[in-house]
Amino acid sequence: MIQLDPVSLQNYAIAGVALIGAFLAALWAALVVWTFRDMRARSRDFFAQLLAAIVVLVLNIPGFIVYLILRPRETVAEGYARSLEEEALLQSIEERPFCPGCNRLTRPAWLVCPHCQTLLRKTCSQCKQPLELNWNICPLCSAPAPGREARAAIDSG
Ligand SMILES: [Zn+2]
Ligand SMILES: [Zn+2]
View 1 (spheres, protein in one colour):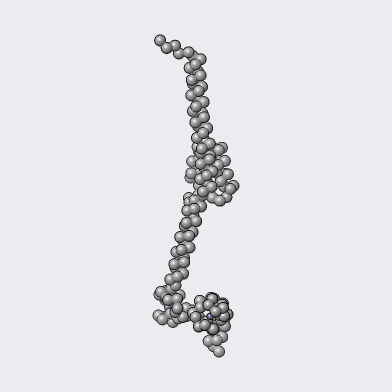
View 2 (view 1 turned 30 degrees about the vertical axis):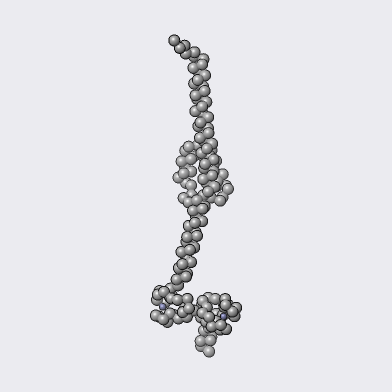
């Protein structure tokens, strides 16, 4: 017959509670570390990273739930990839210029839109290459390009 010694039974209970306590403490610490790392991937702001970790450290699991609700939607890497994508999209729009007058696609060498006669580009006074209207200098021969006022003066004179 096995005799259950009340003292050793109490020891087992204490050991069990200590084990569960140690597990919960480790889980809590892991949550704090995970939150700090996760926030570091989502924000470059060290104060925000620290604040997120402190919220979980102080409020434990409820704080962790609040962090999951409030954390930034995308990581820094995702945000960077998205900004690159947007930049590439803008670039492709710039490379496919449309006539400001009739919205039809124009070619880079065109000076005037053949559909609506809108002025698209000006020519360099020296090398005769097409220049964008807002350029003040020719990128090919470095001759100063006439501005809009100068051009108007040339047109009227
Ligand atoms: Zn046009
Ligand atoms: Zn030129």
